[in-house]
Amino acid sequence: MPSHIENPDVVLIGSGVMSANLGALLKRLDPKLRIQVYEAADELAFESSNGWNNAGTGHAGICELSYTPKREADGTVKVQKVIDIFQEFEQTLQFWAHAVSSGMIDHPHEFINPVQHLSFVQGADEVDYLKARYAGMSKHHFFASMEFATDRAKIGAWAPLLTDGRDPAMPIAATKMDGGTDINFGVLSRKLLAWLGKQEGCSVLASTKVVDLKRGGPSSSSAASWHVTTRNLKTGEEHTVTTKFVFVGAGGGSILLLQKAGLPEAKGLGGFPIGGHWLVCDKPEIVARHQAKVYGQNLPEAPTMAVPHLDTRILDGKKTLLFGPFGAWTTRFLHRTGSWTDLPRSVKPHNLMTLLKIAATNFSLVKYLMQQGTQSMADRMEVMHIFYPNAKAEDWKLVDGGIRVQAIKKTDGEAGIVHFGTEVLTSADKSMSALLGASPGASVCVNIDLEVIKNCFPHLVSGPEGKKRLEAIIPTYGTDYRKPELASKFNELAITARRQLKLI
Image 1 (cartoon, rainbow, N blue to C red):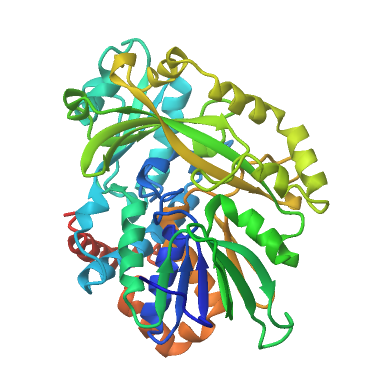
Image 2: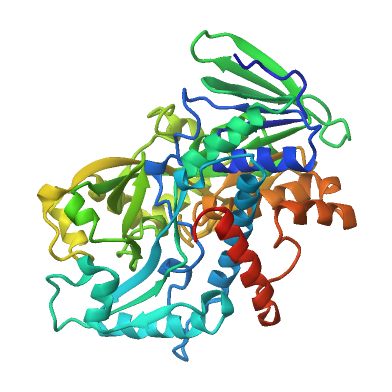
């Protein structure tokens, strides 16, 4: 049985994809580091990283229209964000490829598989938008293989469910790239944590909840540390370790843990939980006809994390179709170990006004979530028919899609609850970092974790030696492959990584 590491150098709270990759990266960069992972649930990576609780999309900016939401006054679409995301996702793939080729993890098909990525729209205005988006993206070497079509037969050849039974008078358009992926982030996380747990000076403990975080030294001191107290949820036994660095990667539980830590940087921070559901089809004759992830435009009032899509997924070793997500109102911050009291307990004097202001200016979103939670199957099928006109309710079942907690900051003002992507909060003394935000999240986890390492462990990556150390495990690190003159070298590295991951 694994036991606590006494006085670890690093404590990772949560066993999701962020913690798993950060732990693996740190141990790879410095094999002498002592690393302790704590997970409150009985199983590892079964909250947001669990395959059923996310879209499984390798968010490379290919098909997600929310990253390029509108046309400019001149009719063009700004595509810099998707170019940036593509490069960040590539760093993630490069590290996973290294993990496979070096024997850290095995059987990549168990967590990553190739699937084409499509964007799909209908209506003349949306067709013009997608055409402009394609024009902007296809100019860049990252997206040179992207195809655009308005021809119904061609789109039907890509994804037959999109065109069967559709009104022939309605203009439609789609873009396609064959280099997309379907990822089970939960399986990947468990593989990385299994490797980490076997390394000298490392331990991964489930059913172990962090119940207190207290500073063990002055925040201005080089000896700054944290006392981390945990409770074994099976035995009730409590244990405290002292560490120099804490990473809070606890998903929805991060807000409450930051409040326990009393971090000044977290003052005014609140959280807004959003539940989710999927419609799932396992009928072999339907599943076999759809080999793609298809994203459309988000519906009015829906948060960007609820953009509808029709996805091929490989979960529990079986190919299936998911459609959604559909939002739902909840006050829980975690699906498995959360409580209905999570939201009320998170309201403090320092964040009360922020939460009240956001509630007042985002009533339409709250109303949307409550309506989503009370939708009938007929209501949900009406949304699906935008993508799959011939869909029948009897072929689909509703399943829980987990919970996301959107962090709300004082600076959010009237901009809306869900308006920024993945973000990391780091203490002034660099002794604690916490993951906040949502999409593209897991897909760019290695890029995010590298930022944490650069901020909090600069000695591991600074100077020629640090760069050489990182390039050995992430060949694209330290070079801006967005530059056109580097297209050939980038393609060479990308092909190598995909071969190692058995994607080609």
